[in-house]
Length: 76
Image (tube, rainbow, N blue to C red; front, side):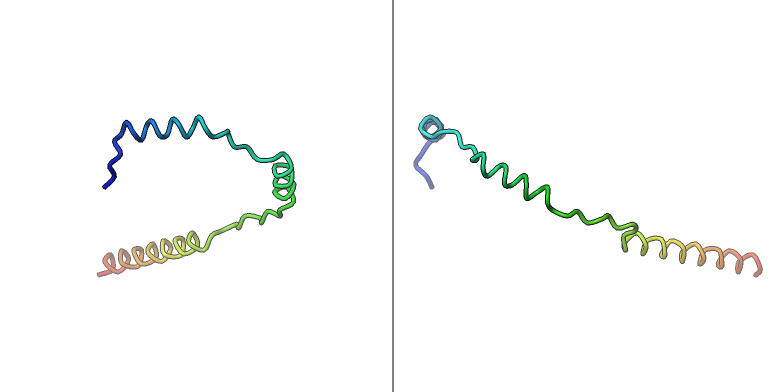
């Protein structure tokens, strides 16, 4: 367990923030990253996801089963 109190931690954080300079990336890095990002190819979105297709198939199967059960009960 630490022997530092909350006041000690606050004082230490304040001292560290006053001693350090704000960090910012170099302009060369920013321009290179922007250029690389703009050159990336974007994959076209898939029209239908397999999970949606599976859901539609299960729903259709359930609907057909329900209709068959209703027809069977009506004829019985």
